[in-house]
Length: 219
Image (cartoon, rainbow, N blue to C red; front, side, top):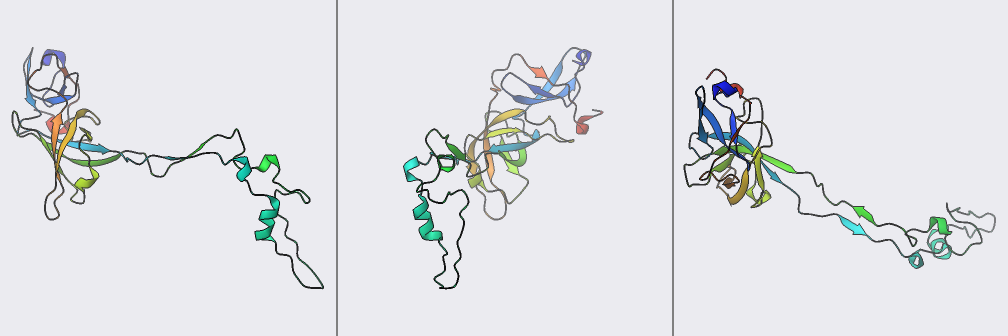
């Protein structure tokens, strides 16, 4: 309670994740509004990640390396004029040799594989508002950005708190995972149903973060 520095608005968690916020404080105890309460709303982020993986290119075998003769067949610029000729010098080749010197052989034996990324592996975050819908009903997330497409969000994507000066919780606190994506007609963004990571029907030991949002100051 208040004797331990607890204040109204502070987020409450258990070992799994966020479960709600403090709504009333007494000297030695406090009341908590669960995240499933219809009056509870929190800015959240949906974390998605590209499913594309890098492509690994194996070393080029030495025998596949081009010879000087084959290169000269495609790069020779000698003139047929009887008065003058032009000779092209190819960087890395020694006149009179018939193969590429070992030090310039691409992919010579013993070379390491090269990993080429084909897409960014950085997480993409979509921001919305999580709303409680009562006991026994999954909370939902409504998006602030109508351009958000449900096809970009996969079932199982993590939901974490977004943070911000007016948020009820600091950023990146685990809340749940996407259990269902519901597309809406028109310009409205999708609605997500969320499976909470915390079991609200079986709560015992809880933690209160000593963080009071600006919106809750003075309550």
